Length: 84
View: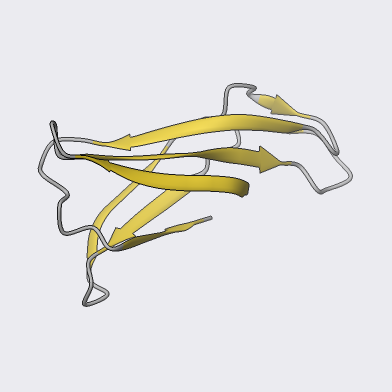
């Protein structure tokens, strides 16, 4: 994943992560799932979720955008995230 960024929505308490996922392999992959883990300042996991990119089938070298929104509680304590 690359060109990603996360932001906190103060109105709703959501964290939104957007970015791009690229197939750097030699075969086509389908149903790629970017996974994000949110951490607080102490390094404790406060959320984990996945999404699908806008293109479900990624050919070698192909990129697609994704958006993942953490909802359901106020994530004001989110300090950073990790993508895989």
